[in-house]
Image (cartoon, rainbow, N blue to C red; front, side):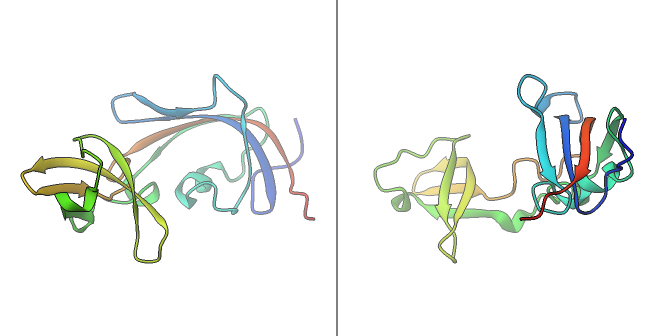
Length: 148
C-alpha cells in the first residue's frame, strides 16, 4: 500500500467497469490492461474523477454517477432532421452510428433514429446521455505524475 492518495497531479492506474441501470456492462478494463490516466487530464469526466479522490492502491469502490456528472441529460435539440440527399452513396440505417462534420470541421458522431421518405432523423446526443451509470473501480497504483 503506498502513502499516495488520488488527487490532482497524481497518475492513477485502475481497473474499472461501467454499467447501466440494469447492470449491462458498457465498458470495462477487466479483460484487458488496466487504465492509466492523470487526474484532471480530461480523460475522465469530472463526475468520474470526483469520487476517486482520496482513494489509495488496493482500494475498491462502486459509485453511482448521475447524468449531470456523466454525459449530460438527453437534449431534444441535439436531434436533427437531415435530408436523405445529405447521405450521398450511403444508405442510412436506423441504429447506425455515423460521423458527421460539425460547424468547426470536427467529427461529430450521430445515431440514425428514423428514416422516412426524404428525411433522416439523427440523434447527436452522447449514447449515454440521460443515463445514471454505476462506476466500479479497483485502484491498482497511485503515484505522482511525471512531468516532462
